[in-house]
Structure formats: C-alpha cells, structure tokens
Image (tube, rainbow, N blue to C red):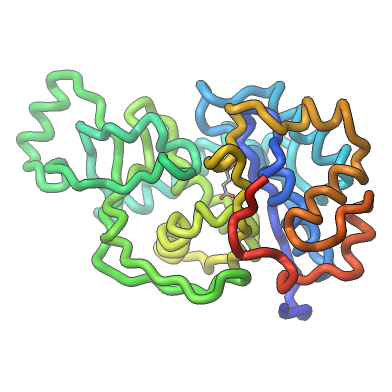
Length: 306
Ligand code: GLU
C-alpha cells in the first residue's frame, strides 16, 4: 500500500437493523485497513430510505462499533454524515447530470423500491431495459399529465470500466451489461448509487472496504464519480459471511450484536471474526492487537461459511 498517501476509509452502514457478524467483519477490515496505514475513518450513516432506516438503529450501530473497539475519526452523529440530511447536495449532483442530458424519467421501474439501498445478492438492480429511455417529449407530457410520477435513471454508455481491486485483483465490466440505473426514486428519495458515489467523492474517501457483493456496483460508482468530476477511491472488497446458504442480512436477525454482545466480550468477538477471516487463531484479541500482523494477503478470498 502507498504509505505516502493519507488513507481515508469509511464505515457506511445502513441503519436498517442491528450489525450482524458479516457487517462486523467488514467493519473490522475497514478499521485494520485504514489504521495499518496510519489513516483515518469516517462513519457515514446510509439512511436514505426513510422506510427502512431508523435513528435508533443508527445510534445502536455507533454504540456497537465502539464496543468492538472499532472507532472512527469523524462523522456520525454530526448531521452532515447522515445521508438523510444531505439531500440538497444530492440535488446539486443530480442537476449536473440533468444539465448534461444524462438522465431520463422512467415511469415503469419495478426495482425502484430497492434503489435507495445497496444492491446485495438477490437484489441486483440489473435493468432489463424499458421503453422510457426513448419516450418522446409528448409521451412524457402525457404520462405526467396523468399524474404518473417517474423515477430518474441515468443513461449508461456502452463502456468497459476496469479497476484493480485491492483484494481480488483486476475487475472489468461493461456498464451497459448492468443497464441504466435509478438515481432518484419517484418519491424523491435519492438512490444508493448516486448518494454513495457523491459522498465518497465529497468526503475525500480514498479507500473503500466492503463486501464483494458490491463489486459490480463499483464500476457504476467509478464511472459516476468520474462524470461528476472526482477521482474514484481505491476499492478493497471482502469475502462474504454465509449462514444457512445465504449472505447474512440485517433483517434476518441471527448472529447480530444484540445476541452476541450479551454473551461475548469484545475481544472474544474480534478473535472469532479474525479467525473466520484468516487473520488469527481465534483467541480473544483486540482490534488494536491485530494491527501488528495485519495483511490483506491473509484474508480469505472465498466466502466464509459459518
Ligand atoms: N450501506 C451499505 C450497506 O450497509 C454499504 C454500501 C457501501 O459500502 O458502499 O450494505
């Protein structure tokens, strides 16, 4: 890693539930990645979707990260680090794309409810394509007059995006394979892809550590950040923790901090997660003690079945 660069990483939890073991593992890696390079960490709450997020979960997540010894340097609870308070900034980014004729209204988006959240497995927002990109002005006006509220999609070009992931190596995908994607829902809520791209750029994030299920979102974000005039961070994706054949989710409730913190001390939890990731033998240990021997080379690449 380039030690001359001042690393700024981030935790970007969605406060739609309590941290589970998978979130804890990615948070530990975020912390180790930044701190082993002498960098700092931002805590940003990704609470875009008012129906899925709550202040109580946000407070609980912050408390649980601290309990685990995974601190941060700046961010939550300051207002400007909660996405729900950053609408005016997203509006400005949206306007830039609009002025450049990169957006169009979509009246038929079936996946739009999910667009405010990061697409995890089973929720890939792979757009099959619809007619809305090619509606005439008159057709749009007719739909508007009938009271139809459109979502807004960005037109993606037929363009291959290439990046070198810090853990998985070269990754390449054509933007057109994923299709046009939603940047604003019809109820006015900004979509995850726009908000996360803008925020990583605006907050000066230069290292993103997150689950590898977001690898294909990464090409969209690299492209969007470049279109908005920024330079994309480096990305380091992490293996997923799989329980009962599927990736854990905050909504599923099992193996989350509510149950784990009642039974185990922070060092036991960090020791257990570190063993799952390939970083230690499982004995109780603090995040700080793990720093000494931390290396991405030790972290498994295959998903981890627990
Ligand atoms: N807010 C997302 C989540 O909790 C993370 C998105 C990201 O790291 O880009 O799954």
